[in-house]
Image 1 (cartoon, rainbow, N blue to C red):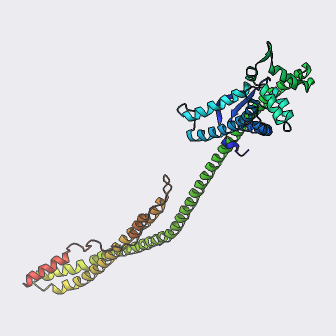
Image 2 (image 1 turned 60 degrees about the horizontal axis):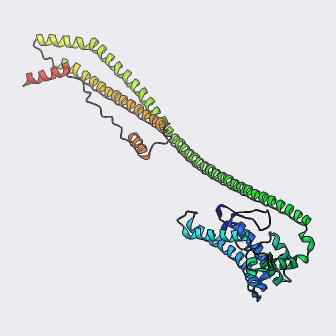
Image 3 (image 1 turned 180 degrees about the vertical axis):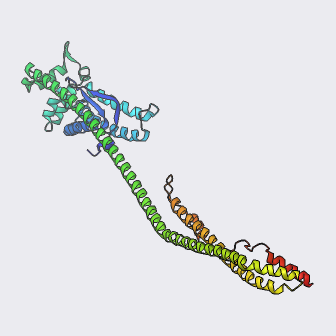
Length: 413
């Protein structure tokens, strides 16, 4: 058989065939079952073809029709399979598909009615026994057993036909075959064959269902396997990305630890300088006040006495002005250094705080992602900006010395 099971088409309903003279019921559910059965019939009856050229028209027609019927059934099955592929269903609108199925039903019904014999029929047993040596005799036997032959041959006398006479001649060749015991055995065999056929059909249906279930199960497992592989691949990608982010986070954190340490050390250094200059500034003020109390008051008192005597007070003013000017200048320098280190102390602390804040914000707990490149540019520009040490004008307010110098200028003028 040239066609495979994949070309088989399920009939819309089961086609049944009951060989004439038997209780056997053949059920056909697919075109492949009909094709396989018809090919077996065609092979069994192929040797009857020489009788198709016999001069007796009815005998030749019987032989020719036997071969043509099964060849036509096979052709109809193949045509059904082809048309079903084109249409995709048994919808009534596909007229050609329905016509082909109707022709197939007619041929199977003709076999059930005895117009064409099959190997399972009781009449066929003798014809098959005569083949292949006596194809004409086999065709004659089949022709005599056709329902229409009796009316065609007519009667010899009233109540007796030529068919009965000719069939009797064939029956005399094998008397035992017509005995009641043989018929009983044949009926039993037909019953067993019918049951076996039904069991075989049931087994085929069960096997088909089992194959369908296995195919669906394998398909489901394959889909599940592909889903697991896709999930595993996605998870591996996520792990690789997370590992890359963690590595990048570690490298960035390690790279920024050094600037944090540097700015912290710089802040600590400026703190000690600020403390030192603050103590120096306080000490200079204390020394200046003690010196003024110890010497300045006496000098100013003498200057007042000289002024009362109308004497010149310039030497007294120079005596107190020069040390006062030098002390104030040194005090201003120390104050400026104190202010500078205080500003640098605050700036170093600010930059260390910015680095630590940046490190803390590098990992976003909600999104699980690192900061972007523009954020890196922002922190780097903030860290590498120029330090601003120019504070506000820290010059002391006008003192009594400035007022005195202004008065002397007016007196000279």
